[in-house]
Length: 629
Image 1: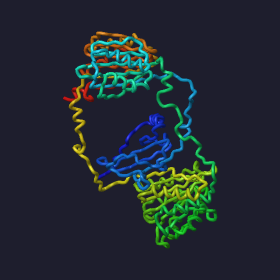
Image 2: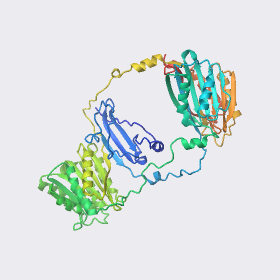
Image 3: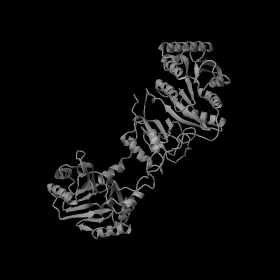
Image 4: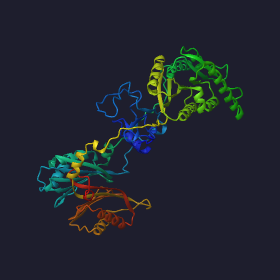
């Protein structure tokens, strides 16, 4: 079986991720995959086998939680597929990638400040849909009085006397409106709570309405809609609502001024402590240096190591510096390969460790890359589990050392193979050790121990593992997953809800916006919009018994009541119109006809930006009647 299906939990654009990251300062972890490195300080990818869909990927991003170094906790959640994942011995079992990301300048220059003047250039609102069932009060008595009392008690300003007819009532406020549709025989009230001001009180207002009618069975959801320009509370709302423009990234310069670090000592310690990563004793190592006779700290460190039985020095070939002749490069590669094979034949071994010293040039990295990426050379020169290391004293200009290791990771292709970056910082200096590891089933644990050992020996420096990058997910030839059948899950609650639900009408919220083909300002007026609405209602045969229009803020509200339904229209004072249309018939054709007629009446200068259709009724309704036939 081929197990190559990768599931991404969430796929969002970088802009949306940035917005979400602003929402996470209280809840500092977010999940997704691509572009996380641009948005979050810390990212981690987990890879795990999952029933039915083979393999699955879960990616985390955070500006507060360092997934590799932060302590883990047991949150008391019962697990079924995987066991304990929070102990020191299990925390990295599923880790495939980890990275600490240095925030780019574009993410640190947010612009503006807390003292910047407020601008009312956009307006947004929200409609809370509340199904209040099993009410305890007499619904035949004064629902508008109840809604008005609740609204005023919470500080809302009722702008117009409430309107009611039959089993419908509405209270229009400066900050929004509350509409109620009643079915006394069902002990049910359907509330629409549309707020364009003080929207932060929506949840409290919904709870107060539910409490006022004595409901014990409530379901609700929200629809984001347009707002109201000129709202009396817009300044207050901007101060209280939504994520604030604040810096959540670590924008400090990536330098540690405290302490001290010596290049030679740091290299010596790092090379000595990288030897245990080979998971072997009496190892054979090769060290690529600069020109023969020049200082090569890595060579000296490994030559003195008790676990290294054989060190093969590789010096830069003569005539390479400044050369552009391809023959020189080929000749150098042939010589190095020949020397390596002779040295290894004498030791009856293969390389456990290959080190490219900080003195090794860019050209020598190219030549070693050509040697190391060959399948034949990998089999004849390198031990099945081998470590390849680079050392850099310039993290800005020597990124080609990282690329060298990453090419090896891609050449090996499948796990287990990782590339890691460990940074050493102190006294304003920074060094980086790059590590490529193959055929190690637990590289993260070994890298953690390596980091700890080096930090203990260099107490005056900051030693930090910043990147672990795995290869492609392992291909499983004999994959035999545990599969769950539908009957393995308890479907009784869902079936019971499906049988009990009773849809009583169709509600459609249509948001009309200016057509992209329309140039210039539309110059809408409340009377003009009123005409659009009346034309559309006439087209669908909704004869109005009550029709009202009210000026609110810079825009207005239009209300129409009919024996077959009702409509509430909100104009934001600019170019956004929200139509809340309710019909008892649940006919989608009626709604479509209304939409088409409305657009025709405005010469298609307004188009549908968003549309939400939902059934209203009892039994926690989620289906229209024709869905259940």
